[in-house]
Amino acid sequence: MALFVAASSSSLPSALSRLHFCSSNLPKNVAAFAFSHRATASFASSSVFGRRLVGSLVGFTLGNAASSTCVRGMEPVNAAAQVQSGSSIYDFVVKDIDGNDVELSKYKGKVLLIVNVASACGLTTTNYTELAGIYSKYKNQDFEILAFPCNQFGGQEPGSNAQIKQFACTRFKAEFPIFDKVDVNGPQEAPVYKFLKSQKRGSILGDTIKWNFAKFLVDKNGNVVDRYAPTTPPSKIENDIQKYLRS
Image 1 (cartoon, rainbow, N blue to C red):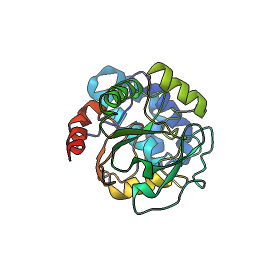
Image 2 (image 1 turned 45 degrees about the horizontal axis):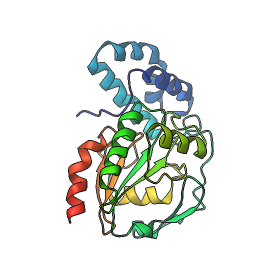
Image 3 (image 1 turned 60 degrees about the vertical axis):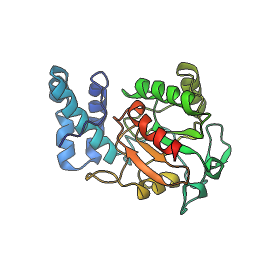
Image 4 (image 1 turned 135 degrees about the vertical axis):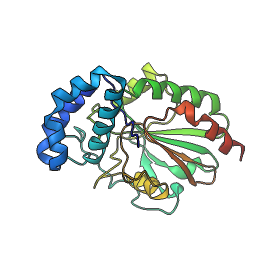
């Protein structure tokens, strides 16, 4: 079984160092892995297999340790201001990047791709570039991308909402809606993410979001129809988007 969860070779040593720093708060087997981070980083840089294997371990470990205070974001996220439960994606009210309330019911009749984004991840450039391209192609065909910044994975979205907005809109010309920074796992997870995970279960490793750029696809009737791993680029989802746009 291969778990190619994101950790680029350039960011891997810092991710492992961060994991090492957190090891006192992690299970013993994870802590043991963290303490060997120098040797692991050397192994990871020596081969493609090494990068993939260690990337998988780091992504899985940080994803499941995301509620630890040393991995979580610098700014606390308050989910209390959001609608706490719902039986449909359209029942939720969220905050946009500028702090305004947004009722997700405004997206009824549209295909939605919902993504937890980060600005300093090894997957950032590929995902933002492809997301911007796909949005430009289908935005006039009842399609929306809803991007939720999250700092739970390796501290890779530490900036303020204003900084995140400037980064996405200036560097990648992102035109799709970007929302308030949220938690996607743990006790402070955004209610909309609790709902998404309940509708489309994860892998055998559990329902938690494993890393930046996990994706959920929602059809025009509000059904969560698919879920994609962080390492699945948006271009690989385009055929599914087209299918639900036609339905």
